[in-house]
Length: 323
Image (cartoon, rainbow, N blue to C red):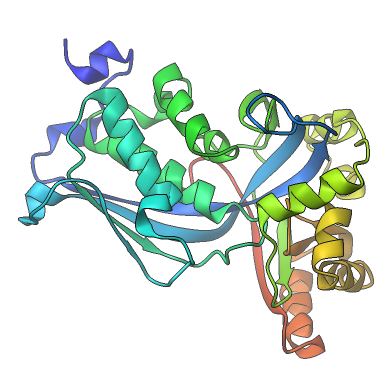
């Protein structure tokens, strides 16, 4: 029995094409519409979290290439980034995801991974986790595994969860509630494509690990995720914007006060329905009434402070990844 059959997944059509030796994907950023972090850590050192996430049109570009097909020498994944993200290749989540998936499925790790970074790091936008999930999906595609089924396969999901808390979400980035350490998909909601978004990030980033350590200094109980889940289930965008919640934000703002400055500035702008810090920051986001408002606010942010990075984008569904 071949590996795909053993995994309980059907081969994709791409596997029938002998000339297909590379897969290119968009690795989308994410927003935490609700992030509820609970005090205390489990045996793995993680906090229990309730995380409601949605994907964005802002995305890294990830290409996975079979090294044998290009004549490249050597064994093991090779990782090439368009910029230095401050992490050695072997500690990068994309490299880790590739090696662990190859180990799980008994495949030789002879692949090159190229990542064009567009999502700023240390922003709470999930770029590293999305890159890792994209590598997993690309390898499944190259191996003839149906990527639509990959997000439901325990072997694939367990690898994703071992790499990072948000990686499982990016295997099928529909609006979702994740529980556990933020790595268990509990509920999936109807698609909410096309909601205008502004992202504004101060110059300084926030380390996720540091944000959680700071949270432990003065922990606070989160609000339940029920209200946000109800809004998403109903497709009520105004209710989604009014029910944003992130009890990790105060810790991030203590580390980088500019996080709070950006959030307050966004909430004061005309056309903003709701705004908050995403994840551990330092990026804040605003949900806007129109795409025109989002573009106007993004431009105004750059004029308001030369240290602020900003962009307008929109929410996207789970089918936006493969190029």
